[in-house]
Amino acid sequence: MSVSPRTSPVRPGHAQGNPTTPSPGDRPRIRHNDYSPLVPPPLGRWSPELRVSVVVPAHGGQHRLDLTLAALAAQTYPAGLMEVIVVDDGSDPPLRLPEKRPENTRLVTAAPGGWGIAHALNTGAHLAEGEIIQRLDADMVISREHIEALMRWHHLTDYVVTIGAKVFVEEPALTAAQVNTAVGQGGLDSLFDMAAAVPSSTEATIRRLDGLRASKNPYHVCTGPTVSLRRALFHEVGGLDPSVPRGEDTEFAYRLAMTGAVFVPDMEARAVHLGIPAQRVDTEATVRVVAPYLAHRVPLRRDLRKERGRRWLVPYAEVVLDVRGRAEPEVRAAVGAALGGSLPDVAVTLLGPWSALPEGRRRVLDDPDFEARLIHEQFRHDDAVRLADEPTPDPAPVPFRYTGSVDVPLGRRSLELMIKSLNDTRAGLLVVEFPGGGTARLERTEATNRARLLAAPGEDLTDVIAQTHGVRRAPSSDFWPPDKPKAKPAPATPEPAAPAHDRPSATRNPAERPTPRPTPQGTPEKLVKRLRTALRGR
Image (cartoon, rainbow, N blue to C red; front, side, top):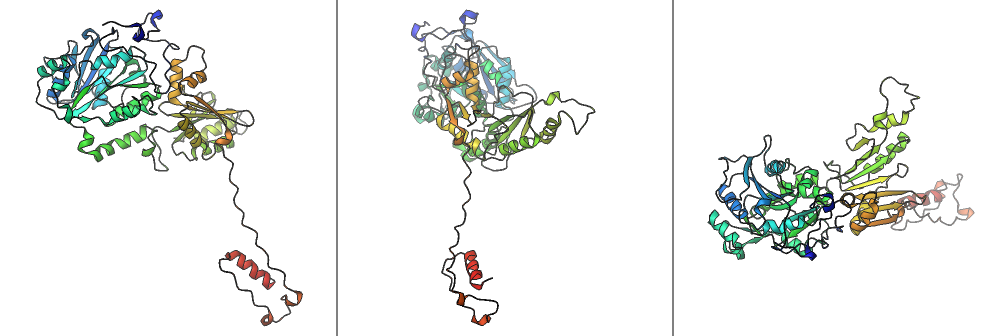
């Protein structure tokens, strides 16, 4: 394979002795998910360098696994740069390696103490030796260029997650030899009735959003059957969550998004998924089994968090308040405002000298740390409040972080309005300006983390966020609207004073008192009583 200068992979880290890992400040600065600055080389016309570990989790299904490995054995990506790790997730009988397979293939059993796709993938990833991890399901027959098509993007930069294309077919009678021969000749169409294939639901979304370049939340379509990413990025986010038996790929993709990753689908990485998707077989059960796992772990799924009063595993927003030197009553008021607002899933971090508070015998009433101790005791048992000496550098997987002052408590809808402003403008940072000159910040986690990844030494993160997501500045009045004054009832119009000789008096015969005028229909009851009282002279 040869490389033309125009499409040559970006290798800004070459001077440091590593031609495949860009250094901070030299990576292409992609805005949102518009990866247009990356120009991949044409298939077959470039020289790969990165090693890839294809991790195939499998539970039973020996015949389908044989077909998957046969297709992998016919790839255009150099065999010397590819290893395949098949992870047997408790199959009975145990799986075996077939004759038709890539030359560097090994079969391992999933680590003890767990089960499921996520657990098996984590096992394979920990054993992987390649710079790139390619996840592939054990019931996929991929085109001969599949691995090459996805890998070319990883040679351009190191913060992309690539997604292959797929369709679903009923499994025909095939042998591994047939698959290996047909894939090697570039003939997926000769193996399957592609006209009867069921398209992936995600591909319509990919096309509608210009290959995800215009997508606000591209992680939604990053489903698991064929996905690749840097091994370092895989481990940075902690791998997949083995406690999620379904939807583990979406939850994993959400955490990748929070790191600032860019999602790149490549429709030239074609594949056929053997069998009809579960959503077509039992849509209701498929949706219901995923919902509670994503509700707790993916805060951006607002449709799954409709019940008031619930507490969620991952909050929607973190409110950070520096309480050093503050009085306990004002801190309690600020925390109450943050937790009692219109957003129900908020967590609060209070920054203070907690680890420096002396232990042991002390004077209680005139303790120099009197206020700090009261704040500490007030909130150390509250699950919604965290006490920390310093803020965590990275709030992920929480998608938003607000940093403000204790003496400007949040209004009931302040946080909601600020997040809406970020979402409406797709900005990565909102700087709120107060009349007295102070400011508060609302950061989008994915934007801040991408800025950390891209910033050159000493470069201001705000400047980088402005390039990749945008920065908005707005007055506090946009988010602290003035309280609407309560409407006062209109004053009653008094009746004209009666002539002196008609006014009732204590000496007049009650029978001679004038008869009250009839009440007009629709007059308020209180007004009626006032008029009657006035007429009776009471």
